[in-house]
Each structure stands twice: as structure tokens, then as C-alpha cells.
Length: 167
Image (cartoon, rainbow, N blue to C red; front, side, top):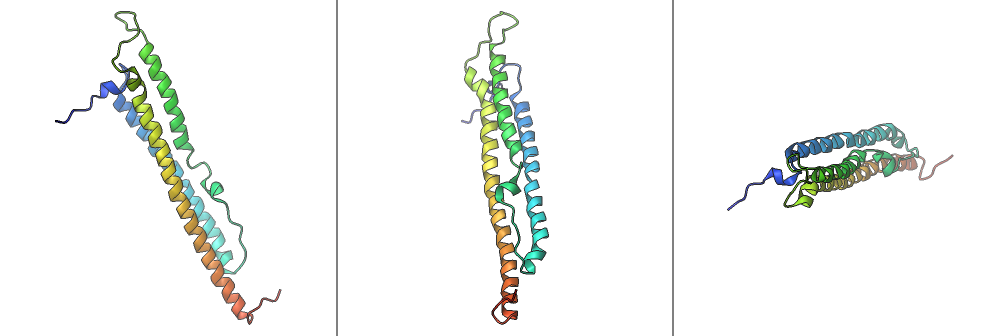
């Protein structure tokens, strides 16, 4: 027998866990869109350097951290926002009940305070790790393509000069 998820048990009373998850999802989606700037930087660098590499000229390549830039900051900011959400949840749990004047009674205060923020932090950090690995793979592929173009041009120039370069 399958139990139905009780959304009210995942957030303090008066707080909608569904809405918090939707807002967290929106923040993570916006962070993902922001991180796509890395792809543009990779493309721009390739477009700028490929003609020089095709001529056999040495090119200066930007390091991975330089190309990544601030792409993952949105995920980190979302994770930090989850810490503040946790503090707000704990404040809501301690808020006096309007009927009795005593702090709110709940059967699982830590689950109510931590469920949505913990899920948000784990998701943000997992997505940032996955994107770091994907972007690093694309970075290495981009480097390989530039190196292949350079080596092809360099080898052709070497062969044209009878096996040597005259400066």
C-alpha cells in the first residue's frame, strides 16, 4: 500500500512546501540558463583562435576557470538562500500560536524546517557538479580541436619548407 505524500508535514504551519519547491526549481532553472554562458565563451574563443591556429601560429588559450567564470554562481546562491530559508522555517516553528500564545507544536520540527532547504541544497550542488564535469569535457574537446587544427597547419608548413622552418 502506497502512502500519499503529506506536503503539510514538509514545511512549518502556514508555509506551502509546494510553493517553496516551485520557487527553488525556478531558481535552479535560472541558474542553469545563466551557466550556459560558458558555452558562448567556448564558442567565441574557438571562433577567435581557429583562424590563427589554421595558419600555424601559436595561440594563447584561456584556462578552464577563466572560461567557466561565474557560470555556477547561481547554484551557489541558491544553496546559500536555502540556509536562510532554514532559519526562516525555524523562526516560524518558534512563532507563538495565536490561540494559545505558546510556541507551535509539531511532531517533527526538524523535518518541517529542513525538508525543502536540504533538498534545494543537494540539488543545487549536484547540478553544479554535473555541469562542471560537462563543461570541462567540452573544454577539453575544444582544446583538442584547436590543437588538431594547429598541428595540421604546423605539419603542412614544416613539409612545405623541406622539413625545416626558416625564420
